[in-house]
Image (spheres, rainbow, N blue to C red):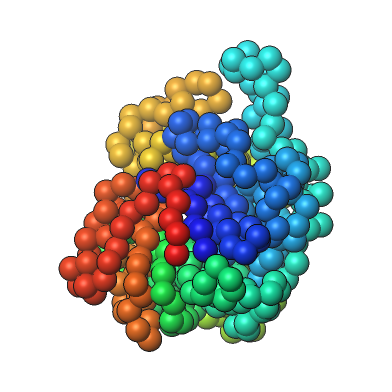
Length: 455
């Protein structure tokens, strides 16, 4: 078995792992690179294998850094199936066409303003490309072994994080040898407010583990209390709380927290607006997958009852003229695009308002700049001053921290022979490698981009 690291090395984006064994090629995850321009440019690089020669794709979950390259892969000639959990398919039906639409809008903007060296600037893929790619998706039931190819076995099991997120175990037995490989995917937290904890990992000889928070611990404390303090002091100033939040996962967690605080009368009964059609649709999907999260059927039915769902462009624009205390939850979570950018233009320049982030901000994103103390950020070609209060509820992160990752690994029935640490910034990944060696006494290493190993 040959394993090649085509992404998520030295960064938290672009997850892609190519497996080659007995004449079969499987791509585990198929994500877009995001953040720094040098990373985004990798999305245009040719893969080391022709897409037509890849037999199948297996997705751990729906986030764009794990699924967003699928339409490009299909556009370049991939004709195999894309396997994933049922909830992942439902979310990809929302996320991938939206990603294609954004690609088209960015290309159109570049062409109209002459901001690209390419004439004309082209999208990586279009909304139509994404819809065509979705026809290749097939649901793989979670918690079962599947022998889709001779000598191969695949198994998905729940990883927490977001709806449908899974770890993936690959086993093989053939002329080229036998073995097993476990991909953690993005692991959720045992103490997540919304999602159920990850299942215990199965035995495997090799592990590929994420390290988004490999160099830190989530701060202990009362998440609801901190959120209440932020909302209360902003309301006292007569300001508006703008929450950039991922449409899938983080937006629902924030809304759940706000509902809990309102029910307990710990914050005023302020208007709450969810300004993301995708987040609105994703919220509905939660009602169909009780197995993934902690909410009861009754709680799901009541989810969002006192929230205004903003769907039209006109209603979205109207929010920017509000002058009374309120809360706006809008995508994207790292302020890299979406409707939240218009809200940042409107509300970031004023001291009475608050920009509240709800988790990890990748290097090179506007979110990272704002959280890092930038006094102005470039949005729509202009610099916008940041005078609003800036807060970050990193306690709402959907990723396991260092100790939670170690605890998950420690639940393996027996130690693996090798551990590869990926999906982390360089400092985080190396810290995780050291922690695995020091605490678990396992052989761990951080692979380089496009490196390959024989298992």
